[in-house]
Image 1: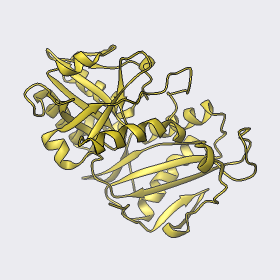
Image 2: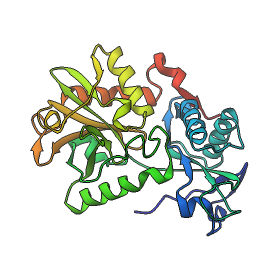
Image 3: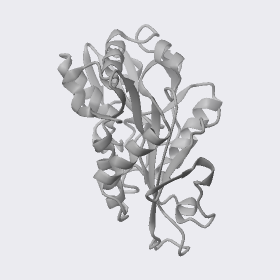
Length: 306
């Protein structure tokens, strides 16, 4: 299924037609993966479209760029304004927003001195792992591919080249008949999905891998941790083993694209009762209420498109 084409894409400070948003074939990022990016969602609310945790996403983009010694040509505030502009120009009520910064043309080679370019697109996109997956849960397998160790790549950055192992893990899982993969870190502990953070629930406590397990510090992960705490659940960041996955009462993925997606089966073993667990579904419901602006307590996380 292809992208739902919209009218405009923001490219280097101006709106251009969707089909005009192009790069040269000798763009550095195309050859070496030298890009950093974000995934952001905008939701329909009673007060109009609202972008969820926009500033936090743009701040993470700036940090990713700093890690890779890329000087962004725009400030966080300017990028936030551009996101609002691209949603508004395309007349979107709900959408996914993809800002990207990348090294463009100039030289070929690893010295990476090429100028940094930026683009931002927005289009309608449902839950990454499917609406059916959110309702019934998905089947996953532990991948033979691992997340790169932190002394190999700075995994705290959301960079294009980091996703090569994730692509292999996802393809491996899908070809084997599963919906998604779980990747381990270099120590053999649970890291995350191919493009999502992971939580398990055991005896009413939520567990999620720590930063040193080669995870990306997900903004949806953080959101769920805040919501869970506010709902009275204990959340622990601890190393997880494969056995802990198999004996969990519940498990779920989090991510901007995936939102909150229950996991019903891991490596052909049912999770809990083999269906989405009650705590998972409560968190999913609360998450939906928050992003759609129905929880005033969390209104600070919403940027309204006016």
